[in-house]
Image (cartoon, each protein chain N blue to C red):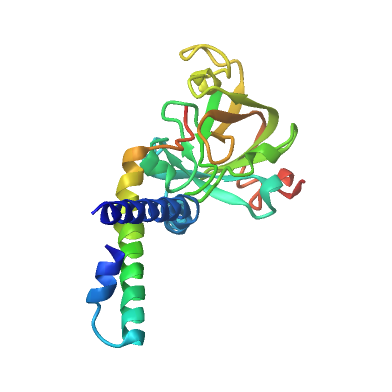
Length: 218
Length: 50
């Protein structure tokens, strides 16, 4: 009787352990498969939107509206940015904080992206150094931002995505900024890794069809 | 539970080993394709937004 009970309990414990291990495998690797596919899909849709006409200036939730190029992550590293930062949107790629500035505008163009799993778009956010270019491509322009600071903050410190980073949530912007947030440390959500940048300049796509020189840097 | 399943698998040893493997894979597939996606969307950990 006792033997059966102990055996049943140990089988349960071993099974639970195996299921938990499999869950970690799922979170860290398996989610990449569907997220990579979703990212390819939204990127393709955006390129199509751009060739067929002028896209909506206010994208719907989950809709891609820009590409972010980060040469430090690799010469061809690019991700389509979708509108919104809820889990559903972030599964498809880096997400734009609703209500924050659009690329090139005064204010804070703020993005969130997963660190580990679901495509891991911002896995290497910690390797960015001050001065590194982050190029944001829209339908008609290239916006070159330069990294200014990297910090680790408490998840409640939402002032990092304020119009002026660190300022009031409804304050006036003092410039055109870029903010990228992700989980920190890796495999944890205890803190947030935050990279700020400032707009260096914008060029129209007619003036630079292949993109600004900053794309070739690093 | 596992000894019970093993005793009830039909056929000679190679067939039982194959059936057992298929059962394990089916359980893993059910977890990966159905259970984990649902569980993960409810847990909502690792949200990288603020």
